[in-house]
Amino acid sequence: MATREPALPAIPADVERLEAADVLRRALEALGPERVALSASFGPEDIVILDLLTEIVQRPRVFTLDTGRLPEETYALIERVRERFEIDVEVFAPDAEQVETMVAERGPNLFYRSLDDRHRCCDVRKVLPLRRALATVDGWITGLRRDQTGTRARTPKIGLDLEHGLIWKVAPLADWTEAQVWTHIRERDLPYNALHDRGYPSIGCAPCTRAIEPGEDPRAGRWWWESDGPRECGLHVPSGGRPVEVAP
Image 1 (cartoon, rainbow, N blue to C red):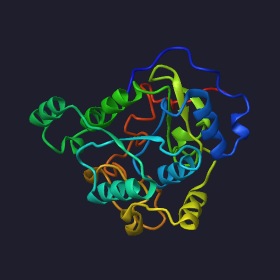
Image 2: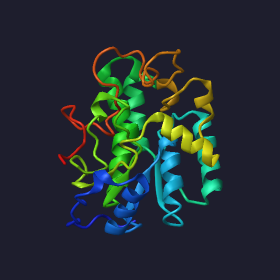
Image 3: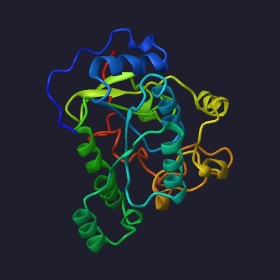
Image 4: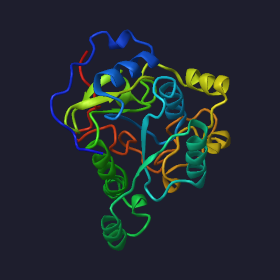
């Protein structure tokens, strides 16, 4: 895909009043289907968004970050999604030399050592590949919801991504609840990660994700050994810990 050209259209003033499908439709109309892509980790929100997208455009752009440490269940789901929606999935992997250097210096499971080591691993395996992916678009679609974490509470349905060149960041499910997401999945009989049925509400890399106990916060299974600060990988929280957002 070609790299981005400057000068994007203005974000629609009425976007917060729009339903999810209309948010997607506005983004596609404003930027063009080749310049907007769904960033999919293949959580339930991503599956719902993909279902909505394929009602608007036949073959929407979808990319994923293959960190090299994903659960086998996630890879299996990707194949099911390809077949169900008849789409291609663009895969962005970490730079092999950077991974080799990191592992040689700090070991394959460095993320358990310290917060700095965990952030380094996330940067190499997720953040840097995301930058490469976003260099090919004018807007990216995410499954962020406002009730997921405190850092996401003010997520706009369409905002300017302050970290990636002021491109559009589209969160059509920002005002949805988890119950709404799963209702849509069940009503439409959509595929989802088998780990969700085993107590994994939030799924990332295999070594950094565990099942949670009844009553635990849904994000408790991510980087569970960390006790301080927001549990984010850097994809949605820029330097300084501020959420990626724009004032309405």
